[in-house]
Length: 118
Image (cartoon, rainbow, N blue to C red; front, side, top):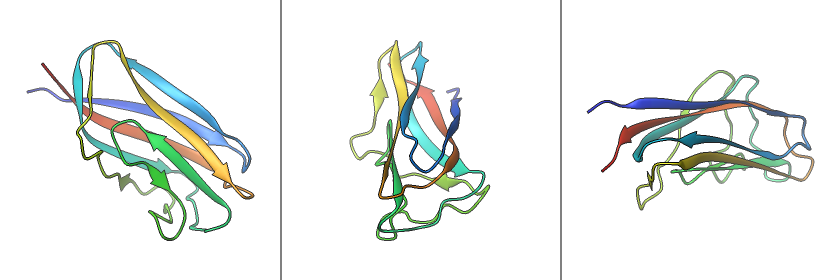
């Protein structure tokens, strides 16, 4: 069974920037893996932090009690959603970025590994 990589890059912004990024998926597929990387890294902080809601995963949260630090240029494998995400043809892979307190600057990318689903 062939697998496909679906990346979103340029999830960028200063400490206050938030937003959403999405890519359409033209075929039915299952998320089998997902990772995130930040070129500058993100320090763990319980007051000034970033959270990302990422399709097919439990997300990323830079608070120390959550995933915490993202080391610069080092990929972090994310935990997949327990229910296992299957997207219908025409579905969307999405990243939603939110920041709290003073926030954190981000220079991130997300990459999903997908496989066709019936």
